[in-house]
Image (cartoon, rainbow, N blue to C red; front, side, top):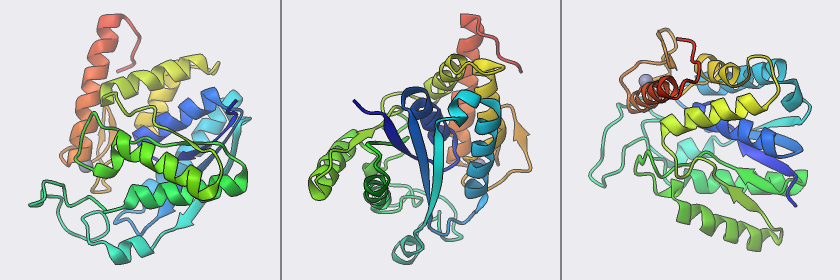
Length: 249
Ligand code: ZN
């Protein structure tokens, strides 16, 4: 029986939804993020705001939400030259991968998360990787996650479960999942409160833009991350209206 989890929590839409998922399912949940000198520190700031808001608005979850960990991973910036760590534009490379791809990033994240989970006595590692809105990142694939689960469990002689609640759903379904989780949480405003929190406080934009507020949140509106988030939110709202779920516009 799994009762404890560590969530890879970056402060974006996906990892915030994963955190809500873990809080709805497990008795004790801790969070971890990695500072690898991202071009923009905004995501790391956003995650603290999300944690604060979750604690304030969802008292039942606040009781389960434990320690937050921030691990320094500056070495990742030393070994990789990508648009997320250097000041270059996001583009596709000859390999077919976007230059925002940081080789081995998720492999390192999961290895360090497992080492931390081992020390903290946490059984499940929850991560928001996804094959559906496929950005071409090979370290987000389901097979990679299963291989990592096996390697980490064998290599640390501790049975870890790597859980990926978003693996097979698209961004619109991720918004719907957030609404459903919020509705179950017995908090004021329920599902809409969690959707509002994600819109207002999570950060996804690759360019670190937070001066423009859209219906789906803050961002430049045109980078690949913003485009995906905007498209998913529009589809979610359309679905919600058809299904008669109230969405405050
Ligand atoms: Zn953007």
